[in-house]
Image 1 (spheres, rainbow over the protein chains, first blue to last red):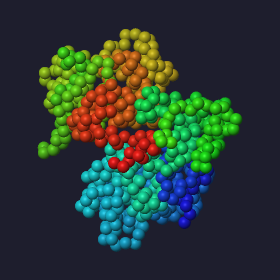
Image 2: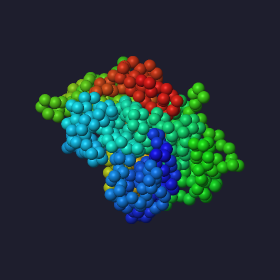
Image 3: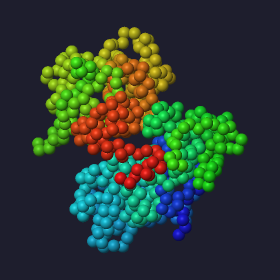
Image 4: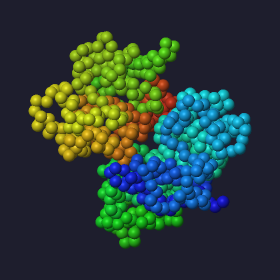
Length: 338
Length: 272
């Protein structure tokens, strides 16, 4: 098996609405390695979720993949039918959503919901599946799993429910796990436990995780690599340290400096003026240009390509072009013991 | 002496919700604290700890099961309420809610939404002057006259929250109760709204109860902070005291679970 779990090549997805075509994802290139945790950070409506839904073939009817290819573990799944996808979902890749209560069926005991997903993919007797389900529940940190096997979801707290959903997703040993804002609905103390759980699962099973979030703190904690999305495009991608200590795209600067945690150290909370553009008629050039105080005239005219910073770090801004004017980057996070 | 200086105070406040004959939820269980004029009091805690219930008790939406709410030193809750001060609290207190989509009537234009408190409390004898005031207020919160005719559905989340804030400021309140006003907003918009709150609070010097679950936000905006856990206020103090030298175990736990957007520090800390 190759080292690459998922490869997206110029993925372009559009929604066709009454108002017209909404370009939700506009040409995303991405590689996800086996056993890697990639965090995708961005504001709502930037296409993070749509990107994952396209890979899972879970897009609504009015959406269409306009261009590009999706390769999962060496297999091109772009044109797969629903029937072909059913075999892949769960066994090759799984998805965990934001709200665990709507993901789980409230009337069916937790254990049964996990067993269901095991039986779907493995030839096991019910008894053996039950044992495996209890093992999974223990792995995701549910104490007294055997006793709780027959309880309905409402007996569990939010964090516990999210653990159960993760157990369902892991039931058939997927290679890729899409975690869509899994910690957003959780309290801080629970959130950090779920983040630790994801790290632990990666250690144990070697699954690659695409972690969608808008929380930079969570990304700092678990990511190997971070990608920042804006208006349907990846504007910057790099190793976690490069992204936090040496960001190059003005949008990443803006996001980081609007975090209250960073404002506490500098005393000023910066905000990005305006709001994300509508993708109904995306602006020409760099979509961020109109909110960007560092924008160059060229930004309004032409879409910047991904410029290489290091082998792992790329950013789409004309500021990195040779001969571009030097700009003073706002002070962000200082690297300790660098 | 000290008691008079609070604009709004809770004394041994209890709010129980009977669910069944044998089961009562003690949402707020004996909480005492006060908000001084012109200060921002941040209330933090996890889901279900009673933060919002306290906010609703203080502005009179709920009647406390026992204990008292005081407004400017007079009791305004229960049977012993001072009628005059109940009215004054109504007039001088405003609320900003979390979900701006639910807080604004979807069929009313921004103009009518912002003018409504004025209409109810003072009446509008001079429509032109009122609209001028309305535009001025919209400009103060970062919107403009072009938004007057819009419906809430045509605005983004951040803009709707700005309309909510403009509405609450129309009657020059002395106390604003903000119940998770930034929780449902994106990072860049969240920063805009926090800055807006900070700015207008510094200009107008109203007192504010700022309820939030995001500790960093509370730390940034508050003068004093109260930490709640399971219906009880476990710790209060100035922002610096609470964040730099937490006394209660729960506060320590809460503080240690804040994620920091700094990979090296975040990873070094994870050994817990």
